[in-house]
Image (cartoon, rainbow over the protein chains, first blue to last red):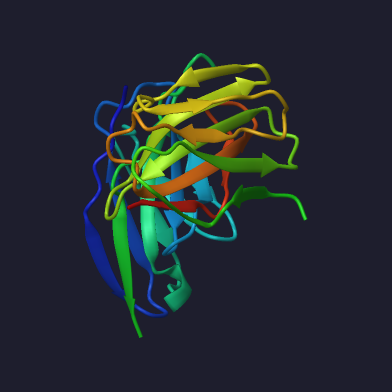
Length: 113
Length: 114
């Protein structure tokens, strides 16, 4: 069961880019990298996921290292509404059952106005 | 609107009482999940169901029970055997495959045992 490591907290300024790191040195070849975020007193929401190539969507970009042992979630221009806890999790192949469905403590992102 | 509805949002109970939390989805998703979150902590998986009439224990199933009689509904009972039931409970459903699917969460139920 592959695990991830994230910093407990990060701080950034409004309207600046934010790079949230995630280490997953024991990732297997079939593990997908998923990111979710959780605003205070709400359920998490999906942000993005990828396997090997970098991914972009309307919320963020996901940069995956060539060896896949780490990844970075990029918020291109942070707003106060991006202040949340960001979770990086790994999910494996179709036979994975509940693997990768537990969320660690994540990174608490603080945005300064 | 499609989504996950959890009720009640807040619940207070006396120690020793069983409590049932409701989770309903109209997204037509097969898989549903129950999580527990304690203050400052991540989410821990209690139970999950990948199809109607079938469910599996997660990491912290002791003291909890579930049923999945209908696709839309996945209620969670917190029994008196759960030693520390005060927590924030989140229900989710999944669209797509296990490895690539997107989880959709409800707004949560906050249970306080007095």
